[in-house]
Length: 249
Image (cartoon, rainbow, N blue to C red; front, side):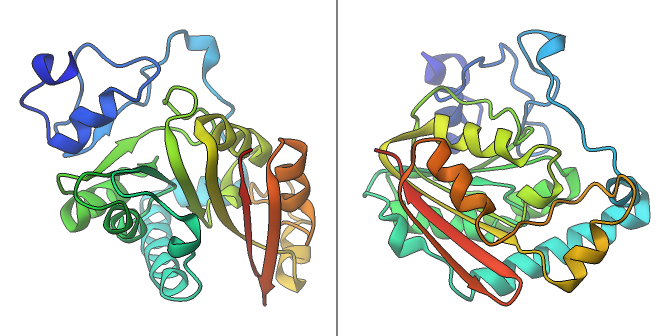
């Protein structure tokens, strides 16, 4: 049905429409990604926005540029070091999701693991970052969507694997996003999330009034995984970076 109605869309985004809980009648892909912000079934369902001081700085023109470049660099460095693509065990032809996809390099790695018949989708809220991702990584099996990680636009149990790097610390209620990730993950699917842990810098930033950044203790994310019903939870911390992995039963 979707292929018949939207034959002018890139192949990856046509496939993405079939995964959406509320697919738009007139998809906005004018910038190369599917823009879903504002496309909610009701206005009162919009998730809480992060309005902290650090988020306000990022939202400024200069701050946005600095954040986008810092996020892109961080994802490239971290993805070259300890990126758990093999552990995610994405099946050939499988569907994977990158939450907070940044410049798209990790999304592209997911697509390579899924193969030509698979699909990897990246979700981000930053327009400059999405533009960079589309330019660098969009393909027949790689697509990008503008949406809020606190309210993923997909139907339940659509993805074989989900990954997220350095995003949860910028979300008002990280548990909301983790719950959304669990919701869209298929039974047997795997998730891997990387977050900063609260070293000395984190302790200092926690004292900022309404700073808008979360820093995690060693057990925070693993406990959240278990509370949401994930199994086989494993955490690995190196310096101020922690990977937490688990599987949906």
